[in-house]
Image 1 (tube, one colour):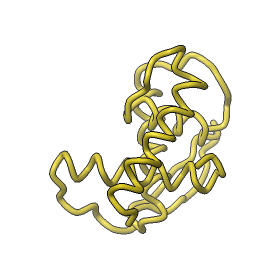
Image 2 (tube, helix red, strand yellow; image 1 turned 60 degrees about the horizontal axis):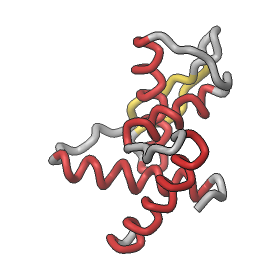
Image 3 (spheres, one colour; image 1 turned 135 degrees about the horizontal axis):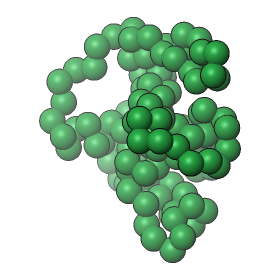
Image 4 (tube, one colour; image 1 turned 180 degrees about the vertical axis):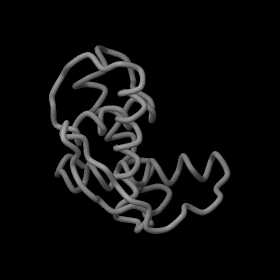
Length: 117
């Protein structure tokens, strides 16, 4: 787990970099960053997605983000190129603030792996 101060600094750096690139002058929040990670993981580039596809993109991102924590494992790509994951371990019951910290930590780790933080 990343230390609280280090997480805060790294999270702010991720938000700044992603917002500068995709935010059009606005600061992006956690949900939008998760959505963008889903788009990145799908790998089809910029296009218009339908509402159900947007939900699926966020699911892909969450699975990918929590994969290093042992909660999900990549399973396969379907015929349309969408990645599918299987549950390895059930997520523990977390309070909303704890969920947010876990996801921010996972996002920072993701961007660290990509060499952006």
